[in-house]
Image (cartoon, rainbow, N blue to C red; front, side):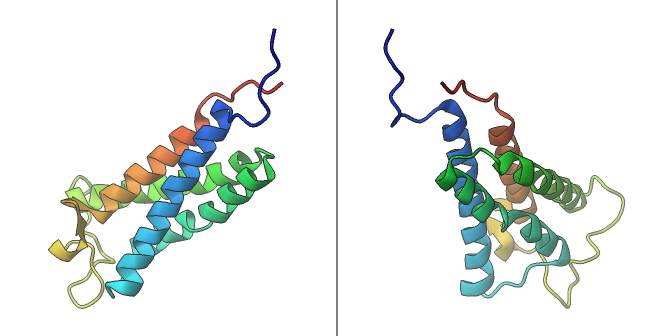
Amino acid sequence: MTKADPQSLSRDDLSLIAAFLIALAATLGALFIGEVLGQMPCTLCWYQRIAMFPLVPILGLSLWRADGIARTYALPLALAGLALAAWHSGLYAGLLPAPIVPCTENGPSCTGEAQMILGLPIPYLSAVAFAAILVCLLLPKGHRP
């Protein structure tokens, strides 16, 4: 039998890296839309940012320290973000009976054409990002020697 290479990444590390990259891309995308394009997010989008933004340092520090503690802190944020994004997506799609109240015609809105990325509305993209992060965090842990 050969010893495992200490430089190789485990399956657990790869899923954590994937979760980190998804959170980083979502965070940078949200900052680009808000700060560079100057489009204000609606209230529900703000709440989703509150759940997404801390995931970057939490997952990044866990990768850097190689301690695997990220799941303890990241799972509640990812679950809360997914719940918010699912609610927002349901409102956007008209599946829920209430209109998107925070998205007003006088204030910030995520219902306009300017709030589409690759033909998908931002609430849907947020739901996909949170769901993907959850899948990465919930993948079975790899075996460490």
